[in-house]
Length: 67
Image 1 (cartoon, one colour):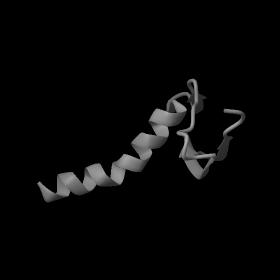
Image 2 (spheres, helix red, strand yellow):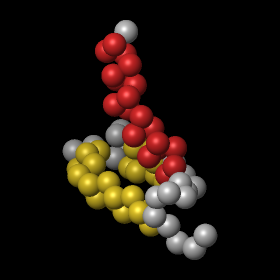
Image 3 (cartoon, helix red, strand yellow):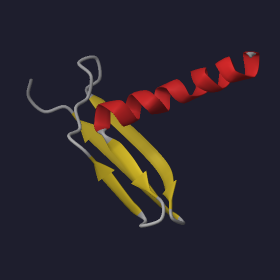
Image 4 (cartoon, one colour):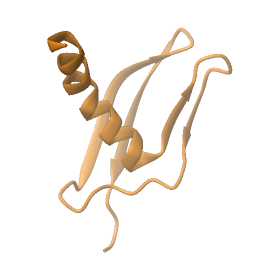
């Protein structure tokens, strides 16, 4: 049980990023998709560095614009 709770806690930040940005990684096609990204009000910028997909790496920066 404790291992399951630890795994859930470790995955929570990634789930937040995926939910807020609509981030979808397609490893087979080697693509990245952002579906209607919207950062939470408490977050003005989000930077993901060194994301690995299909043997490549990418950096991604999202910034809040307007209200």
